[in-house]
Image (cartoon, rainbow, N blue to C red):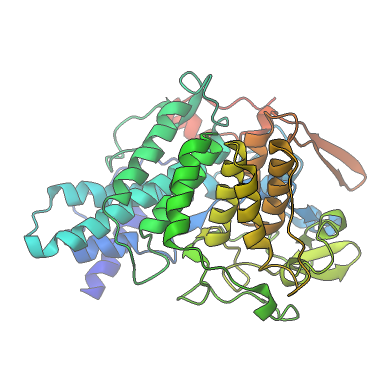
Length: 459
C-alpha cells in the first residue's frame, strides 16, 4: 500500500509538472496509475511535506514587515528584489513562480481527490472517513484560492467585486479544460462555499495539526470575511472559533534567550496552533543575518512586552532577525492560531460598536504577552481609538505570519489606517502608495501567453 501511495504521489507530481511551464497545458498520460481508495485519497491531502500546508512569500517580501540589508538585496533573486522594491516587472522572464505554481498544484491535488471521491462507492462504515477526506480537500482548495486572491487580484470591495477580475477558478482535475479568470466576487464566493461545505464535514478533532478541523475552518472563515470587510460574519465565525478553542500561551513561561523560544507546532506542542502551515521556503527571507525587521518596528514594543525578545534577536547594525515562529523552528508559521482569532474578534467587536468588549478581548491576549504584574489594561475612548489600538497590536502579534500584505490591502481604503511604505535600498528610495496597482502581483507571463487570460495591470 505504501509503495502504491508513493507511486500515486509521483504520478500526481508528474501530471502537474506542467506548472513549471503553465498549469493549463498539462497532458496527463492515461496509462498512469491513479488513486482509487479512501486511504490513497487521504494520502494525497496529507502530503504536507512537499505540496500542501505551504503559503506564498512574495506578499511578505513586499510588506512593511520585512527589512533586508543591502548586501542581502544584492544577492537575492530577481523576483525578491523586484517584490521588495515594488517594480512593475517582477519576474523578468522567470518561468518558475512558486507563489503561483505551488498554490495551483494544491488546487490540482484537491480537485483530484474531490473528483475521485465523487466516483467512489462507500459503505456506511466509511462515511466518517469519507467526510474527513472530502472536508480536508475542500478546505485546502479554499486555502489555495484564498492565498492566490491575496496576491493575484485586487482587494475585495463590495462596490466593484462583481466586475473586477479575480483568479482562475479550477474546480476539477481536467487540465485540458480551458479556464478564464472569474470575478473577485466569484473568487470569494468559491472560497466561502468550499469552507462552509468543509465545516459540515470536518471533525471536532484531528490526529495531526496539518489537517484542519472544525475550529480551524471557523477561523479561516473569520479571516476570509475580515478581508472582505464583512465584520458581522467575521465576528460570528471568530466567536465560534473562540468558544471552541481559546487557550493562550503565557509568554512568561518562555525562554527569550533560546534560539526558537516558541514551542514546536508539530506534532502538538503549541496549544495556540489550530492548523499548521508555513511560508514557502525562501533563502532571503529566512536568512537571520540579512533579513528581519527595522529598528523602528522593534522599538514599537513597550517595556515589559515579552514579544520583543521572544520574537527577535538583535544582530547589530539596525537588524533585528525574527525567531518567533509558531512553528518553533526556522520555518515561518503561516497557519491559523488562537491569537489571530482573538484579534479578529476584537477588531470586529470594535467595528460593530462594542468598544468595551473589544478592549476586553484585546487585553485578555496582551496580559499573556507582558511580564507578570506589569500589564496595564488598555482603554479606548471611541470606535476609531479601539480599532487603532487593536490594529497596532495585531501587527506586533502576527508579524511574519503571511498576513500583513492582506492587512495593508484591506486597510488602505480607510484614510485613518492607510499606510505609505518607504524603503531605501543602496541609496535609492522606493515608495508604495496606498491602493497602488502594485499591491497586485502579475500573473506569470507564460500562463498569460499559453492561456490567453488577462494580465494584471501594474503601473
